Length: 266
Image (cartoon, rainbow, N blue to C red; front, side, top):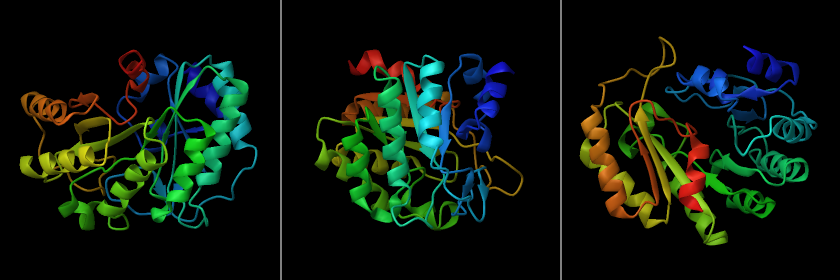
């Protein structure tokens, strides 16, 4: 595939490939990708994720510039920047997000930038750095309901993730915030409703809800496949709670068709 080869030639990672997203072929055909910064090896061992775990690479100081040039070359209108979790770094990688956003602003100033960030271990100063760089959407995924955190993402913390999203609204009330949930992991309807309510209480604007699919045989198992009717039920509840934009369906992922939000937001 030409687009995939282009990414390899320019030494760029995408979460689409690293996490084994089932939509990657469709997105690559549209020359859309979610860039993965800070390497492709994560310091955490979340059981739902297909990204490699272990000792991460040394930071590449030229990566932000390469991404800025790539976004310009691809003539992107909307770009999503995410990363592995880097608990080994004092700032959790916030500085690399900031530098990447600034590089995109330099080379492609008309592009809308969304940053899908880790929790930086609760270091909210990193959130402010990224907002000050000029992002359009600050995104951080809750992923699942609090009861399942010990089994699904044991090194994360539900309240800490809420704190990260809440800090974005505190630093920049007019900036869009976004989160995402995977369904079919053993959660109940009531638990999903409670998470949606908690996200709205901290001002989260956008929510994505999709079907969890194990990325490999040793991953956390799927407990059930959620029906289209249930996805629609969650969408209606989210709209009722006041979310400005809701993507809810089996194939939805946090960055899937993210660029389609622009007309709705503007």
